[in-house]
Image (tube, rainbow, N blue to C red):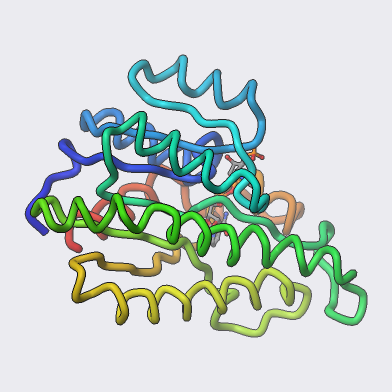
Length: 226
Ligand SMILES: NC(=O)c1ccc[n+]([C@@H]2O[C@H](COP(=O)([O-])OP(=O)(O)OC[C@H]3O[C@@H](n4cnc5c(N)ncnc54)[C@H](OP(=O)(O)O)[C@@H]3O)[C@@H](O)[C@H]2O)c1
């Protein structure tokens, strides 16, 4: 990789909480050009105000109709794109449910958010990423996965199946885009103390969990190394 994160033009979905927010903060401290996406407009504004120069985009990555607007806002704000981090995520049913008790609609939400959203956004931004690769800047997509994509944890069916599909999608994207200079990889941040984790496992001891800032640091190292 011949670009440092300080010069990066990077888009992060789910940049207002947990890992995404920690990543936006770390990138901002390095002077990267950042666009981030989340649904709650007030929180998007608050994060953008906290870090002047960042571009907050209100949108729902699970909504097909938002895809092209989000993609255009990203490339317009950054003047192109070097890195896309597909981080926003849905658990599916909350509280978590066994598959036999999971409504189709909750499985659909997990798939729309964790699989189709990243697929659509990546596809919509491929042109910008290919230009970055052609210009020698390097171009990367990082999809945030989970150990639930690998281990068959009871109660994590909708989430785990969507993350497993996302992880495999990354591997196939990487095979197909390699020759165009675009690298696609997965990153499992580990169990972190975030609102998503609290929703999934409300009784977990926060002290036993990773801090999102530590996972964000590891993610930056992955981005740097690609
Ligand atoms: N926390 C863990 O222990 C853990 C473990 C393994 C993997 N992960 C993965 O790590 C990533 C980050 O998780 P987290 O725990 O940091 O989550 P989090 O704290 O709940 O933050 C999720 C972020 O995504 C946004 N978001 C959710 N749905 C969205 C949608 N449809 N469109 C746009 N933005 C959306 C949220 O803002 P809005 O609600 O305003 O949209 C928020 O900014 C996820 O991919 C998760 O699966 C987490």
